[in-house]
Length: 496
Ligand code: URA
Image 1 (tube, rainbow, N blue to C red):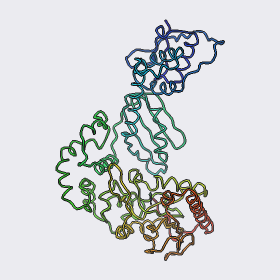
Image 2: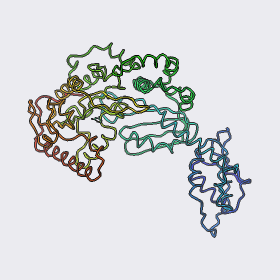
Image 3: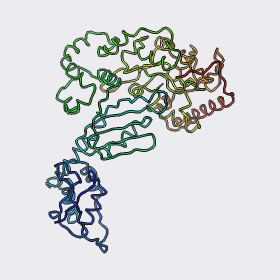
Image 4: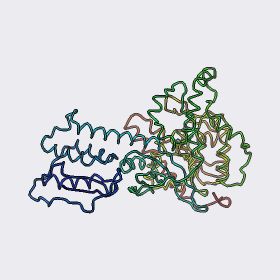
């Protein structure tokens, strides 16, 4: 009898090396016992692994790519029999390369079931991880840090971690699970198999999740069976929004009748929580402490126009309180509304790339929007961006002017017509004012360019390339403007 214990949860490379040694020595599957050092069924690893002596003369093994793909998924399953199953398949493949196409073969069926379960677990994790923000120690600055607890059924963490790296690349995060952890610090993605314990953490993002969930919940499309299939109850305990579900379901019928009676332009009914909170906070007439962070705190409760009823949260400006350049966009989009930070979605990515090409460090800019809430119309599960109207832009100008007062930038970049209107009341065609620095009343320089989202929408490839090039040149011009002006401030910088 041969025995082999894999380290940790048993990863594919380790299993493959051992399996290759057994296969080359012609060892039949029935005489190998596979385990991990700490098996799911409570067994421990063997004291010694016994591998057959190496077979140098053996020709290299060739395995179909479909097996490698299947094995990559199956190895993540938590069933302790997965290693033996994979070895059986591998052994049999050596005698019949078409084994995986035999849809009724019991080993093939078992492996495909495991791979499917792993795939499901992967997708559930991408949908149900909820990050909580960990405040930075007082007096320190740095990237925002987030933590999430999740309980996957299988060992999918290393497989799914690159998804979170791509999706949340501009923040530091740690995802802990009973089957290991993954973390990202902006440079390195790390994973480990060590089981973690659930910490007791609560934060304001839980309320944001609830507001967001309520905003996309459409009682008219409610299918409870389908919903609990898509969002199985076992995940509910770690989902802040799950506490809303029973009430939303119970009231769905009444809500549909109510929706029918209401005019389409009225705010949606499910924002009562945020509206109640906002109503409790007095509308400020001047910033309380004269700092950006105080202003940001006040803006969280802004009800100056109706857009706040739809949005998940106020997306305030972001960047150093003494930035020399302030960039103004239109309004947060879908991703900004969830992240609470401006320009983190597709337009933000294009903007970041252009800044990098122009040699501008995004962290040196103060980036904000003319309007601080996301205006949209729900369409199915999607939220479709709506342009803010002039009344809304004027209401929100109150915050923009306070930001200008506090940051005191030397150069203000208006990206798009909404920003231009918010800053100057001008309704000129962008082309007429683009690229020509203008003096604002307070002596600051205004530089007008297009909005990056406009560039994303240009259907013709060649035209898009030309416009991207112009946008890059605009950013270079901004860079030159700043360099040409000696650092100058009209008053003391404000602490953020
Ligand atoms: N578009 C904007 O104008 N602002 C954002 O923050 C994102 C997209």
